[in-house]
Length: 277
Image (cartoon, rainbow, N blue to C red):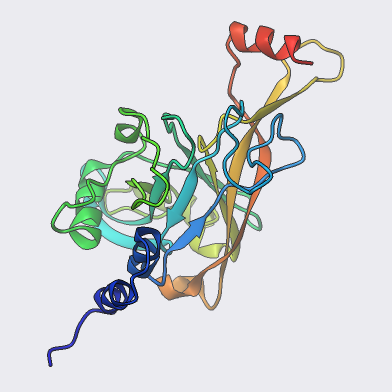
């Protein structure tokens, strides 16, 4: 008998046992994928789960599920830059609430030891190369951080296959030397910290929730600091970063927290919040 892919064998086994559709979805999940479900935080302004542990109907706070594959790198000839090593995170968002919600992502990769911050970039050539690896048949319609905002994430129906929307976040290291760099630029970059120098870093994902809190600035001279409910994905690097091995980048858990952002609240939201205090 010809060898069967593991995912197909699990699905056939689930069907043979008469398991429900949700079990089939779990059977098809790739073993390297991490499914991160919403979780409460003490700063939440409303409950997100009812007493049965299901999404609370009528809650003012919504949170999307997040699924991801391991952080990986790819070398691509980027227009205007030349050949460059790019890091990317393949992910999916799933809406298990009762209403559609628009996902406006904000991905930041922050190193805790070298104290550098890298923002997600829109690089069409790199995105095409990633799709060729991750989804060559273009079944998933992988989006970037702009195109994924076009349509709201539709809610998934109970006991049905999740309606996942796929996306990719991409980072490059501006301190990595490029073929067209001048000698002066190369010398400057040689002294700067590199992403490969970091052994402890996090990816912060904002936009998965409408949760926020405000903190008054001492003296009251400026607008309050807005902190958004954010998913922190923790990573560590084992071995020598100079080897640039993807297998050395290890997922080290996650946390739902409230993190300072540059978000400015609309006047109507401020008024509504003041009435609920």
